[in-house]
Structure formats: C-alpha cells, structure tokens
Image (cartoon, rainbow, N blue to C red):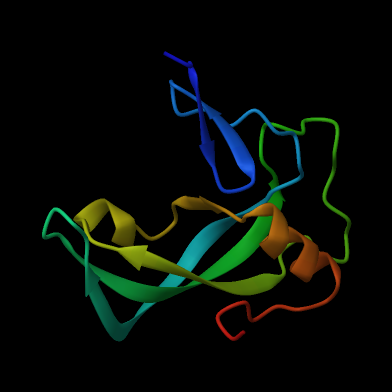
Length: 115
C-alpha cells in the first residue's frame, strides 16, 4: 500500500500532513457570517458555507523564514469555508489560507469570498 495519497495538487502523507512548502498566510478570526448555502456530505453531515473575516498575522509554520510585509500586517481579509461542527465557528482562532488565496492577497485582493 502506498503511504501517500494524492489530493488535488497536494501530496498528503497517510498521516494527513502536507509536504509542500508553498507559503500560506494565517489570520485570526474576527467575524463569521453564515451565508445560508448548505450541502450534505456522503455521511449525511450538513455543511454550511460561511464567510470568515481574518486579521492577517503571519505565515504558517511550514515557512518559518518568511516574514509578513508591513503592508499586510493586520490587514483584514475575507475567506469562504464550509462549517458543520461547533469548533468551526470559533472566534479568535487561527485560519490558514490556501496557497492560491495567499497569492490573491499578495496581489491586493482582500475579499476572497467572491470569484
């Protein structure tokens, strides 16, 4: 059995840890707004799409040598995630952006909930 699983563009070990070192911004959750858009997964769990407002604080620990530019420090960014359990709605928690979302923020976009 292969110890690696291929999920999209990422290589994920059987432990679930990502191996790539692409930069990922992190932010502290300031606000969560439920959009009302819902879906059910194959197990019957109902997921609701939510818009998270984050205050950028730095990069994830995968890239410890990167520092957040002063122009981005404290900037507010909106991202979209699906939530199903109470711990998904935690304020002041930390959310990590995907590499694509990180690139969009670097290009100046702050509302990532819109296509």
